Image (cartoon, rainbow, N blue to C red; front, top):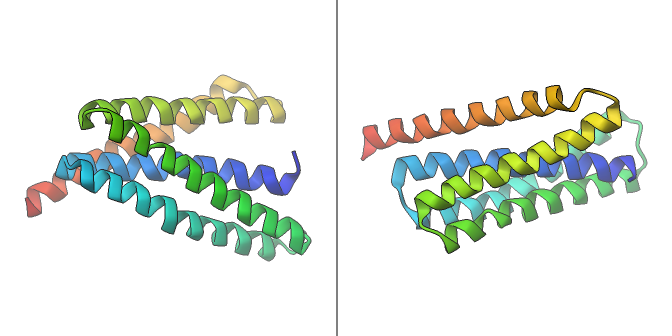
Length: 158
């Protein structure tokens, strides 16, 4: 896979999982509203996908090493990966009761990141379990932090 596509895909997938899970968990613990969670997912899929795409675009331009076509490939790959990954989290929320959808989404998101981390570690010649553990630890921190942030916000305004 070309470097520009690899950068965009891996960044978009990672951001899609972590940002979407964080938002979902926080909204769920704060509102227990399926409408709020679905609305949040759709907002992340659109606004944050554009934001991440532009962020990668500017980052790649800043390096001064890439051709314009490569930069646009990274931009589009980031946007597409983030948008599509975020949208996939709508499926369990629409198909299941919200509590069960949250559990399914967390398992799904952690699985996606573990698979990506495994392939990145193998490509780099690193130990897969260490890389997977590092990435999943960050994800779990995000999940717990946003859960308690949602509860705290609900206690202040609910």
